[in-house]
Amino acid sequence: MTLSGIFYGIADFMQMTFRLLEADMIGNIFNYSCIVLGFVGLFIWLNMQKKYNAAAENNPDQLK
View 1 (cartoon, helix red, strand yellow):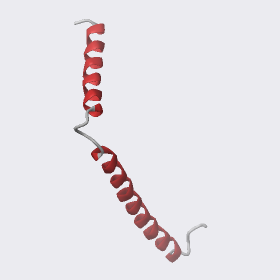
View 2 (cartoon, rainbow, N blue to C red):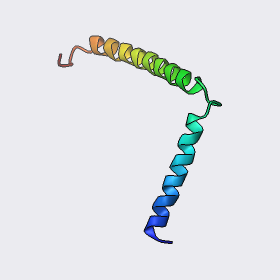
View 3 (tube, one colour):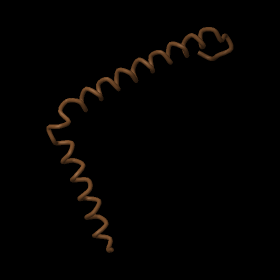
View 4 (cartoon, one colour):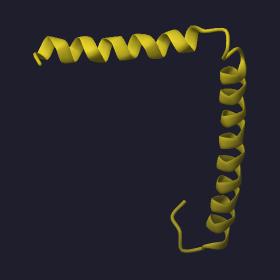
């Protein structure tokens, strides 16, 4: 197998994957899942930041 055969195989696999993403069977599910995942990550990050801020206020030896 030559190097060009490997690259053509990778290209064919990527084109097949992108054709599936263009299909109507996915619809807006991917978009909605990205939005939900973003909000979940935001709330987790805000909760962790609240804990870090509370720990920083309780520690007088910390540089501010």
